[in-house]
Length: 479
Image (cartoon, rainbow, N blue to C red; front, top):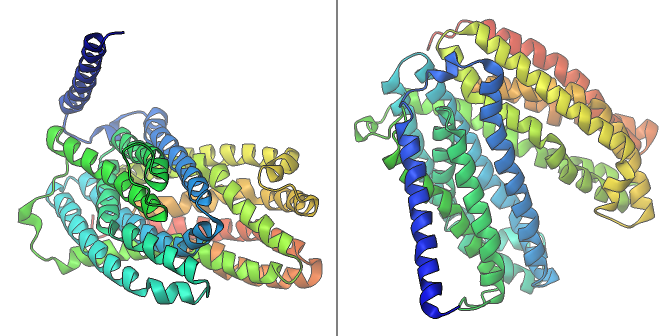
């Protein structure tokens, strides 16, 4: 093919791409700038349309996390160790971003449902400003503490140097992470799940492409090693923000960020934090639980510690579709509660519970009959595989009943009941499972930890039912 033909094809392809983007944004703009569909559209197709984009985007993000680790592992074992040591701090940053943004989305949905657009705009504006402030503070603090933090876990100077290098680049993007998550939840609060799906997928795909280019210096790109991995992650996080900004200005949504809403409002800030802080703790508690259970299992064998780690990797995928439905439910249940559509609130909760239970029933079947194959995906050690088979079969007994607590917790966050949601999380990750695991280990050995999982889900489901019922029947004076 001659050069002119190639150039013509390229220009035609580029033009087609630009036309496709413009067409997409214009189609979005032609949609009515309202949110009443959240209380008018039939519940099943409404919930499905909100949930499926979240499932797809979470699947892509989960894939990115695996691919990112694989590329870093190819640098050296020290690089992978450094990444593992930095991960808890990165996880904390993400927990703060996601948890606080859940508070933003909850208030927006509740105020829109109540027909109070001014307060919805205020919640969005205050939430975005506070998120950006969080990003600046976190970036400075986390960068400053990393050398000492790393030295508390290792004395290997190579690992420490790599960890510091990675974290300095990665934490520069803390503001971007906060902004991306705030925008994501604002779009979700008004039912624009497809927008957030495209943004999240675009960022993940960009990161996957840039990882090998920046780590190994392929083509015109410099060889940056572990710093390249951090930069690829940061650029990938910028992609959704840019996309959200374009859509925000081209395709109006019912909620706007307004300078008129910048006047400090302590009551609004208190409402945002009253929902956001419990949500942050909800996301942080699993790390506390894993640390505690590892201390129990390590007494018996290192294989049990490995099994627990494998289980939590598998859990991400097993619970992912159910979590997608819960995320799709959050803005809907908040909007309809604010609009006093209590019958729809009840139906949304029941349908989400039913869908989650059905998904977890499928997960139970898989773990009961394919536990060995699942374990073999992560290890070839016969002792670990045997222990893992037993663990998965015991833990999965509680999968279906766990739908009650996960659905109730998500619904309460959508209703702005952060404290009540935290009660459920504390029951699942601290109050019930820790004492049960410690007690049952004395009777059943390491298997006592696995039995503690399903027993906890039964007890937590009972508490969740009581907490949720009391929360939704209590008159909310603010809306």
